[in-house]
Length: 385
Image 1 (cartoon, helix red, strand yellow):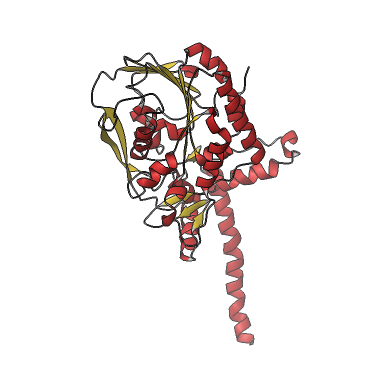
Image 2 (cartoon, one colour):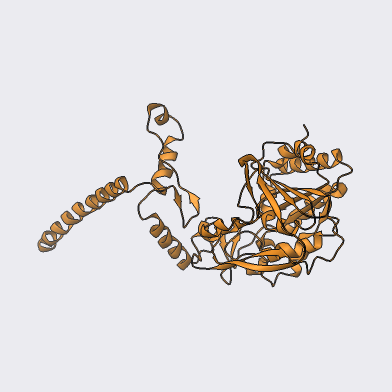
């Protein structure tokens, strides 16, 4: 026993020295390494160091803000996150950071349940808007999220809310105040095709095109549009937001396609109103060099976008939308003289002001289910002056 104690003593001393030495080294490295603004693998902005002042130090959230900063800027964060995800998966986990790890390399966003009070406000505002413009057709597409349509690819015991039922409730509540376009049935018919990305929450251009074909008649487009477009691949190395959020399938690559009209002159002018910036394309190829490649459609988030085409039509459509609509708008350009795109998350104007300014003749509301059920800006932008 005495010999064992003698042998144990030096080992304890070495560990007692190494542990604080390693901690000190990590602290020094964290102090020397510059902070990062964004994480490429997580595809998000990282927390900035809160300014250490007496007034800040006494704020209730100072400790939380500093903890978030220390966590985000910790040296080796990406490696440690990868190890954590790998260990979780070995342990049988089927969800990472709110993202379901489904079958066949597919990731799913959780289905969101609406706050009933907020939902009531949103639907009341849309009905009131429609009543203020009785001579202007208001159409609505509520696109189901992938977990609703491709539920057979969810992991075992990965049960989600029945989003199709939630969408039906919205349809029934709005009743005849809008021209309802049934995206759920359309996408269910094509569920075996590539209608959603595997690593991103958005539908693909193919999924959007199938819904556009269904919507054409409601939008006043009388011709058969099935042969009006040809698709081109603009990227084959897309890895989307769900992969970044979960840390899973980061090596999975996917294809992004755009659809171009087969006939007619497709010249147009795109004005990003609040940015006072103009382009001649609805596609922003510079986004293909970034992590957010889906932003090739319209360049990503913007409050108001005014698209002027050379269409022979005199119609001007207002599209009130979330990012699902960004790849849908490419199908509207041959059929409208002007397309005004409004994202309520960023727009500070009311739709009444937009309607007057641009002499709108048609309105389309296009959202994904998850965004529509959680967006707190819809009622405000639809409200009257």
